[in-house]
Structure formats: structure tokens, C-alpha cells
Length: 357
View 1 (cartoon, one colour):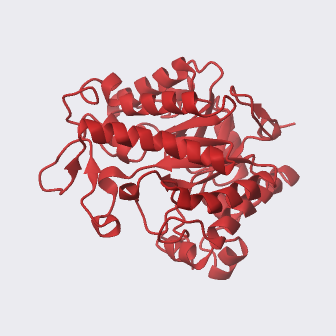
View 2 (cartoon, rainbow, N blue to C red; view 1 turned 60 degrees about the vertical axis):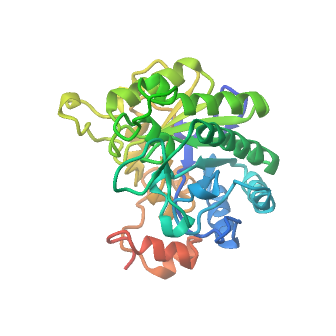
View 3 (cartoon, rainbow, N blue to C red; view 1 turned 135 degrees about the vertical axis):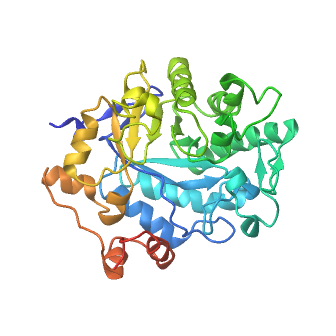
């Protein structure tokens, strides 16, 4: 049996039936207040039914001021519990692990969407962002932890902390964006302190077998590859998370920094001693050959985005025919509707060049 279809046992005690994870995908289908919609429920549960071992929600914001896009799922208040509970049950009933990604957009929150100036680790002239006070950073950490507790209460089996793509935790990691002179700035140890305190808080306040993951991205948005390698090494060595999710945009690319070329970007992370923490990768895994190639790079699971949009049952199709040929873009609106995308999601995908035609 291919490793792709073998179970993986996470350190906290839960098991995933295969190595296919639905990547956390922006789909703009929640209600304006962050409450789950029927369209988002259908989109996610179809992927669970399609054979994904773990089904992850889109980025769910932990503070109202942290919203990053219209139609974003919320997890910052108990008004979200009813929808979240329904979603967790729907995913689990399909024999897929149910996980929420916890998110705050920070300075990337659109002012017209949140109705105020966005927040950031530091002020930056001409941007209109507001620097977080120490008390506000502590509240941010607390709200990530509370969101994890809310996910647990709703019946989810775990959460992933979004520390990638230039959102607020990645803004703390950036030595360019983060100009603080306190315990949350300066050294990489200080800049990653919000992440480590969130991890510690979730581990203390949620049950022992509650899955905990972290997403990192090592390039773009003013982060420095050696810093992210150090962050990854630190969390892997501590062993408090169940999995590390590396979002690379392209799983097979070389680093953009000339000083680190000559090998794949992924290899800088797959070579780290990870003990019993699982390592996954996302980025341009669109067909069976690419999925197999990624798994050969000493990782534990793969995360599908675009491929999962085109085929809600990608894992089942690949299990039935290891060389099945995925649909090619552009695809029709009717095709996407049949794959469980609502109108708002289809409109969003129409903005991806060559995806819808």
C-alpha cells in the first residue's frame, strides 16, 4: 500500500486515516458576522466525504478586528458556536479529522472591512496601522487560546495556528515589520514569543488529545529564511505541536534568496530533526505525480488546495486509479457548482487568472 493511504498517528493520540489534508482555503462564503453558511458547510463536508483524512476550515479570525477578507469564518465569539458545532459534526461523520485554522490578519485587515485602522506589532509611517500595546499583545494571545477552546467546545478535534503569509503572527516574526523593543521584539526568540505562548496556552487549557498544528511560510512578506528555519527548529524540538504545515507556494522550488539556492526550499525543513511531530507541505500539488514526488521528499502528509477545489474526492480518485488525470483549467461555473462551490466562492475563484472560463 502506498504511504499516501497509510494512517498517521499524531503525538497527541489521534489518528488520520491517510496522508491527504484539505488546505485552509479562502472561500468567502460565511455570513458577514462570521457565522457559518450552508454553502461553506457543503463545500467543506463534501471534501470530508471525498476522502480527505483531515478537513481544515478556511482561516477563522480570532478577533473581529483581525478579519482579513469578506465572508470569512469567525471564531471570536459564542455566536459562532452553533455553526461551528454543525460543521465539526458534519466533517467527523465523514470519517475525517475536523480542524479549524486560527487567524488574525493584523496590518493586512482592510480598513473598510473592519471599520477601523488595522493593528500591527509596530507603527509604520504612512500605512495607517496602529501598534499593539503590550496589553493588546497579551489580549491577542489570549484570544487565540480562547478560540481554540471554542473550537474544542464545538467538537473540533484540533486547531492550526496561522503563522504564515504576512498575517499578524508572521508580522511578529518579521524583523522588518516588527520593530518592537520589548519582550515581543528584537531577537527571533522574542519575535516568536506570541506563537510559543499561544501554543503553551492551548496545551494547558485544551484536552491532551486535542490536535495542535502550526503553519509557517519561509519567504515573502518580509520574513528571512534563516529566521523561519529557527522557528521551525524550535517548535519541532519543543515537541508541543502535533504537526508543522509548511506553505511554500511551490513545493519543489528553490529558495528565492541566492545564498540558499542549489537545493529545494522544502529540504531546509524536512532535514530538521522533528521527533514525533508530523511535517506537511502545501504548494502546487495538482496531480498524482506531484503528490507522490512531494511524499518522497521525507514529509508525512500533503495539503491540497487547487486540486481539492477541482476534485472534492481527489483522495478517493487517486486511491481508485493512481494515475487519474485531474480536470484542467479553465473549468466552467457549472463544473464548480457540481464540486460544491457556492456563488461567492465561484466569484472569488474567477479572480484567479485562467481558473474559470
